[in-house]
Image (cartoon, rainbow, N blue to C red):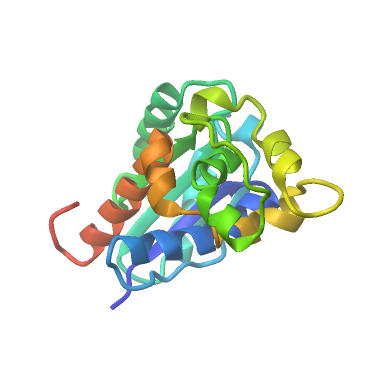
Length: 202
């Protein structure tokens, strides 16, 4: 039986892209495609307000279709992912202790993961070939502008128009090497999927 992961994501573009991303990550890790109900969208400025996280987790629990868990993904922006993620995870566990949970904060934003795996986008013709930043999380202060500067589309990068498509083509292997926060996403997805099938976490 496929595992079920319910995602909580920021904004329309992230929520549209998360099922594509998790399906690809699951395949990379050797899992069958998970059941992915429509993600639940939240606003970053409200996520830490009293009662909001518990409300969102309650909605997510109702969407679970099989053993699995809940994954919250958000942009760290200028915050430290190593502080933001654990803080939200602790709050989530206090509000929902009987369902496996994971929180992953992308360093800067979701688009940083796309840039970290840009070789796949050069090869597919989505981006103009360019020198890759060795550490995108540290070197690229404005990921959306970087994509606008390199995308093969008039008008530059638009997250609603482009993010889901780019998510389907960037190199997961390279992103996991160049982006510690993306590598954490892969580990957390693997943990939720492994736990759902009763095997030891990866």
